[in-house]
Length: 133
Image 1 (cartoon, rainbow, N blue to C red):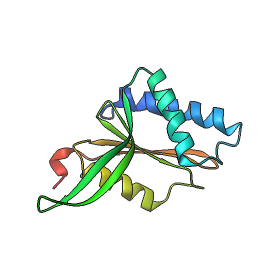
Image 2: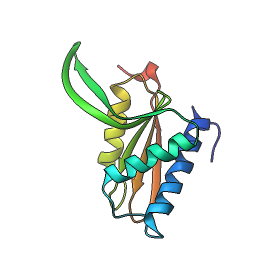
Image 3: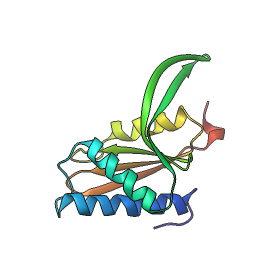
Image 4: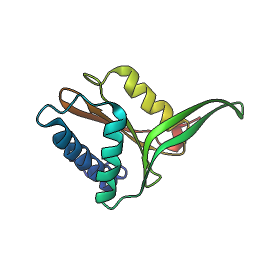
């Protein structure tokens, strides 16, 4: 894994936790459970990695300083990485956009999209705060 990314020490541990969960729950298949099952397993694995994490963290969306919507981040690690979990056949553009929108709505700059589909796949997104409006 590339260690030149922002918070790569944390994201590398998260990705290792992801593969642990994928391999243990998948029994060679890697898919079939609901996202909540993967979320609970990821919380266990992330904590084993020595990282602090919270699940279902509320995110408010603002427009002209007024709240116009609420979302929930699946997991936030060390208050610096948002994890969006999916249990779909594969990652699609809508999943990537959802993660970017979570980053836009928070001060968090790094996101991981982890899919527990037919094959293990993930995406890392970085959106630095200076580019957020």
